[in-house]
Each structure stands twice: as structure tokens, then as C-alpha cells.
Amino acid sequence: MDRTEFTGLLDHLVRDALLTPADAKTAAQATQQQGISLTHYLVKSQLLSSETLFDYCTKHFKLPVFEGKNYNATWLQDPIMKPELICHYRAIPLHQDQKYLAVGITDPTDHTTLTSISFHTGLRIRPMLMAEADVEKIIQTYVLPQRLHAQVESALSKITLMEEQPVFYQENPEQNDEPIIELVDRLIQDAITKRASDIHIEPYEQSCRIRFRCDGLLHETTTLPLPLAARVTTRLKIMANLNIAERRLPQDGRIQLRHPEKMDIRVNTCPTLFGEKVVLRILNIKHSQLDIQALGMTDTQKQLFLEKLAQPQGLILVTGPTGSGKTITLYSALHYLNQIEKNISTVEDPIEIELNGINQVNINLPIGLDFSTVLRTFLRQDPDIIMVGEIRDADTAAIAIQAAQTGHLVLSTLHTNSAAETITRLQSMGIPAYHLIHSISLIIAQRLLRKLCPHCQQPPLGCEHCLQGYQGRMGIFELIPMTDTLAQLILSSASLAQLTTQIKTEGWMLLEEAGWQKVHAGMTTKEEVMRVVGDKGK
Image 1 (tube, helix red, strand yellow):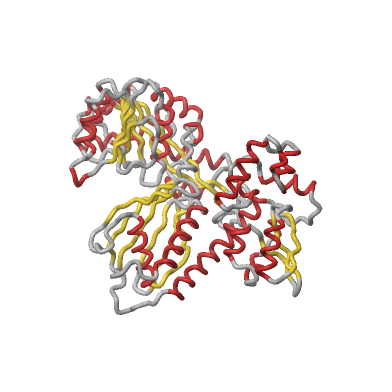
Image 2: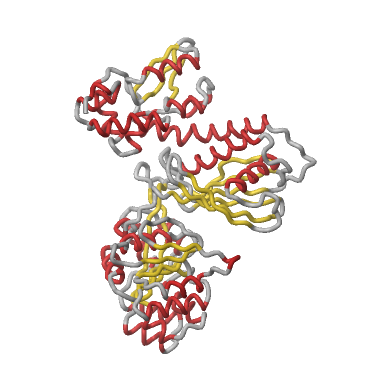
């Protein structure tokens, strides 16, 4: 492929063999189609790192350099460049005087951007070279929240608030919908870029609070007037194919986004004292690493997990509260097991991640398609491996255990706090002890701990890279196989305390111990372990 078809920075990168012509052509097409900057695309698609690009541009282009750590957020208070302009051009306003504006850029050859900024600001531009990673952090930390606030103000200015109308119902949902559509899109995108797992929209007497759940904790993002929040709720209902006129009953829906990346959003509404609370659960398929090696288990735990997955039959249960990472553990196991010679079927509510090569069924209670009905059907379809999204009742538990005893590998979840509690929960459902000991192969209890920020490691102070000194989460696990001694205790109707004592005696790592191991390794703090699992292992 002739490199003469490339211009600007792409031409330099191909000439110096940092990019192949094929990758450069893909980058050129993607940036044009998606409307994003070249350097942003190269880093996002992992064709080149931010450091490689920055070092290359520093060496080959004679521009002054600006380091992101020296950035002062107060520079954004001057409205010379609006947040939309900064995000569109990915150019950061730095110093300015009456005639000149210093702007941080990542592509020294992008003269079109400099010309456009000069036109919008009326100032002459002095470009300074910045790393793509620094630009991204400034945009995420300072610019996007400012942009969201501006869009709230814009929506308020364009919408006629009619206080006499019922607050959470609009007779004409299409009226003045353009600013609301923009606001909702920005809200969702802001949550995605901050890697939030949930958005909470909560109406109260005077206003509506919006919070994001990041790394397991909720953080307030903005507040909305109630009439504006009503429009936001209506818009979300339309997107999720829900009944906008029904405000008395909870509703569940789903929003699927395809651009710029595949996203699945679960929407749930619930009537509260001052209106409908809406919770959006965001599942980013791209960010979900379905790899057992990446879960955070110890080497011994990984080996045990893989041994049990290799067995032709048995029940593997993953336990823990909501938000403890059970879904990723299950899907990582399915991804590992997904081979052409295996017939794998799942029954879920809802299907969280679509996996090619696996037969996935979403239950539909209104028409009678529940877990037990689907499971009975699976057993007539020659399955090798079955995954049950959650064991919620005795009927489902009984069928899953029957399948595990008749030549099938079964994976499922329960909402219990520990492996030992899983045994007592199943017994309370009426499952006989002899069925438990002959079906259960492995019980996994797990939690997610926030990881210390690699940049500052200063909780609760934090830095521009993190929230309160933490960045990201990691799993801690308790893997307990069914041993002969445990089986005997279960048959003798042992108590929860006796089961726990035996597990400790056999030397299996419990959740508390796994947490404190992460503390000693410098990966998290004792306060985080105590918050998540208590201080029993201290």
C-alpha cells in the first residue's frame, strides 16, 4: 500500500514504521466516520500508546510541551472555550491574554483544529504539545462535568415549565424533546466514560438527585428541577420501551447502544413518595474481561476452579450480594468452557452478556417462561453444560441439583454471604443433605474491593486520576470444594458455625483472609476490607 495517500501525522507514523499502512488506512477511515481525533483513536484502539505518541511528537515537532500534572482547573472558568468545543477538538485551553491563547493539543499536524479554535475564540493560537492521556484525564475530570451542568442549564432555558401539570407525567412527551434527548445522551455518556456501573435518578420534594455508582460507591453528579427530571424519566422510558403513562407500578426495560461501542443498559422504575425513581445498570461489554486469569483469584484458587470446570458433572455455585462480581465470574467460566464439542445452554433474568456459541434463554414470567420451565426443557435437549442465572426457589434448586447428578456440569448463583451459608440456605429450601453432598462440586463466595490508586495511594485525599484514593476494583474469593469431612458434617445436620470451623480447619482461604492478603500486598486498605467483609480476619 502506497503511503502517499496519507497526510499529516499518519504519514509520519507510517514513514517511521510506527504504523503499518493497513492500520493507518483503518485509522483514517475510523476517525472520519466516527468524528474523533486521530490520536484519540490510536490510543483508544491500542494501536499506539499515549506515551509512544507523545515521545514521537516531542522528538519530531518543535512545539513547547505542557505536562498534564501542571494543569489548573481554574483555567476552565473563563468561557473562552466552551466544554463542547474542548470535547469536539480535544484541545485544552491553557494560558491566554488579549491576543493569544495557548492550547494543549496532541497532533501537531492538525492545523484545521487550530484554525477552527482561532475562529471560535477570536484569538491567535499558540499550540503546546500534550500527551493524549493527559488530555483525556482533564476532559473526564473537569470538562465533562462542566458540560453536563451546561446542558442542564440549556435544557432548563428551552423548556417551558408548567407547574400545574403532574410532575412525573407529560401528556405530550415529544414536546420540546430535543434538549431532553441531548441531556439524557450526555448523562449516559458521562456515566460510561466514568466507568459507572449504575445511574440513580431520585426525585425528592424540591429537586431530583442524580448519582453515579463508581467502584461500588455512589457519588452525586448533579441535581435537576422536578419538572425537568420528569422529562428525563419520560425520555428514558421511551428508550427502554416502557409505558410512559404507568407511574404506579415498577417497570423493567432495556436500552441497547451500538455507538461508539456496544453497551447494554437495564432500566428499572419504582414509584416513590415524590415520583418515580429510575435506576440504570450499565454493562459495558468491551470492559468486561471474561478471563479467569483476570478475576483476582490466587494461584491455588485458580487451579481448583479450573479442575472443577474440567469435571463432566457437578454443581458449581457462585455466591455473594448484588454487585459482588458474580456475573463476570460465571461468564468467565462459560467463556473458558465454550468449545465446539460442548452443548452449553443458559437461562437468565436477564441475559447480561451475549456469547456466541452458547444457547441463551431470557425468562419471561408473564407468559410462564420461568427458570424451572426452561431447565426442564434443557434436560430434553442433550446439554453438556447448563448455567442458571440464579437459584431463587426450591423448584429451581431441585432441578439444578438433579441435572448435576445426572451427567451435567451446572453453574449458578445464590445470594448468600459465605460458602458455609450456601449449604444452610439450600437445606432451608428443603434440599436433602444427601442430594447436596452428591451434587455440589465447588462453592465460590466473592466480593469486590476498591484498589488503591497507583498514582497517589492517598485515601481519602485522592488525585485527579481517582476517586478518594481508589481506582478500579478487584475480586477476593473463598473457594470451598465438597470434601469427605464436610459431606459428613452436612449429613449430620451440622450448624453454620460447625461448617465454618471445619472449612478453616481444612485450610481453605476465607473472604476475610483473602482481603487482608490484598492489604499486605499494598493493593488496598484495611478500611476497605472492613467496609466490604468486616474485621473478622484481622
